[in-house]
Length: 214
Image 1 (cartoon, rainbow, N blue to C red):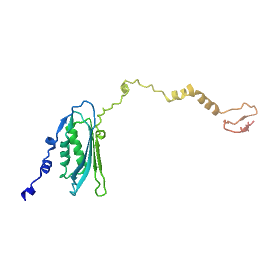
Image 2: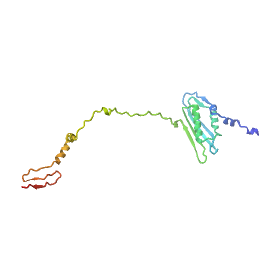
Image 3: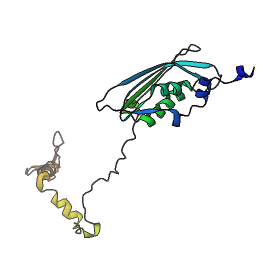
Image 4: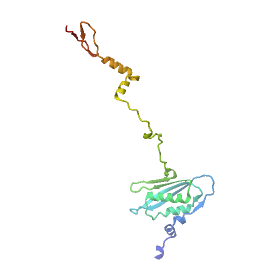
């Protein structure tokens, strides 16, 4: 009876698996760039709410830099999720973070294709291309302004009287219009000996004649 209750060696390895010390990596002896593609079709974890098992196929693709992950080690690491209560999103993000820290690859992409459960099919994808880097802080923009003399340095403005300003309107480019205006509005007088015309303006249609009293 006690033997049946004993933990199997595989169960013990997965339960005691330590990602920091047990995830073995090897030296990459190649100088050229190449792609490593690994498929892990037996991923399993437990739903953090219900405890039901979730199954997925994980596709790992990366371009190694100085290190590569040992295949048995990645298998044990993936199988260690079997008895963990963790969501789809958190599990794939954790795998990406661990491998990115351990391997420091030139490029890496992980896809977690989960089996449908409850009429829901989930695919989680993370890659180096999707990682948004923090933008460089922009320098504070200071607009350039023209140098202007202070108010006290300005020459005082010569003030002219109202009569001077009025008299100067007749000169310059506007002089012609002002002269015409004055000429049209000037009353007209008649020099007829028999009488004189009443003062009339340009807008009057017919002048009225008033006889002079003798």
